[in-house]
Length: 473
Image (tube, rainbow, N blue to C red; front, side, top):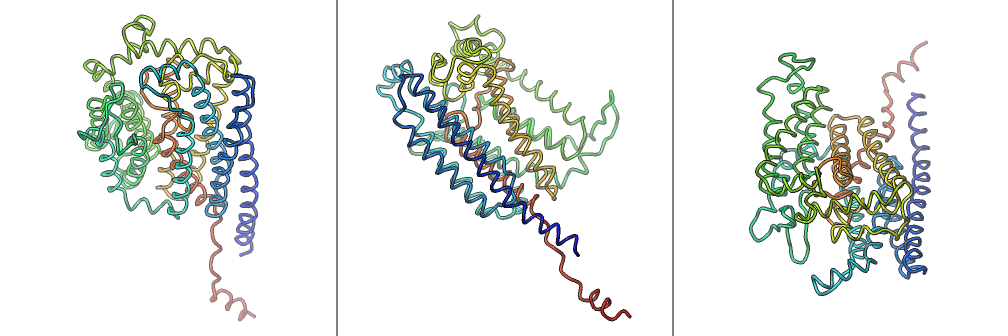
């Protein structure tokens, strides 16, 4: 009895410590972007930017609201997740505002569209909606295990979200990819929300089927191969991913969709053969689709030799500008506000915003940002290891894996490691759907973390045992 009581007491003491740590880290997460904002303003025109106070107060207010909600409804949650997300979101706002000040982009927008509308205020609004989504997740989702009840409903919802861009009159073709829908005056990318719903479905499905999927029928080249009848799920997911790639020309979503399932399948079964089969199927599918899909082939050409087709293909021209931005950044960069990544065009603040990081902060800044992302992924994996239920383990690992995959394909595509996929850097790039969905992802991870770290309640006293001790002579 005394051991359980002490454990509960220690857990109760640790909760305020976590809250204080989070508050201190949040202060740094707000101060650093404010100084970056000041640095950009001084670099551009030598003056303190007029909107710095409003930006700082707005970011501090959003972070404060999020902290109070976590302190009240998730006191045992990981203290690093919220500050890291706030820091990346704040620095993303600074980079977007910096590109809003570009005379080239302003002139190009006026020439092509007749007017110029800055994106930073809109991104601040999207960030506020993202924080509201984060708060809603923590208030409404008292226990993440409730989501297991909606396993197959999540599957249907995910398919609907993925197919919405193909609906005539609703979907929109943007730069060859059909990944957007227009509702009123807003554009929404359903695939960003589909990854969350798919993680719920995969977690519920694999928790039930993991024993059957872990069985091996034969050994080949050191790998235990699964039974033929158990290949159905991965073949189905592979086929759906190819359909998304063919009909929506969306390489990023199809890769994320299939990759997340393979990661979760490996975690559930601990079979290396699933990883090998998944990689082989992904390569085979991408090569086969690239042979007849012009949009995918253009991105492959822009990856293999962008300078050879720069004057003919827009994707090649963008990629040459991106590579030159990274090259001119060097080790320490040109300095915030002093680069020329705006030559990339309108996608400079969305798909290619990491090029601005590379040019203005150099290799050092790139590694720092990747470290921040790596810490979020590490805390997500740590949450999965600490979760006490198999559904929570799979869900936390699936969300962390999807986040890691998105970082890899975006950073790898922009830096020329792999072909471009059209995805955006979480929290950093301009886009409402991305920032809102990723704040929801952080909210779910914080809920799982709080449940995993919360001390177990002390067992109820046993009256029979106490009576025996009293009666015993």
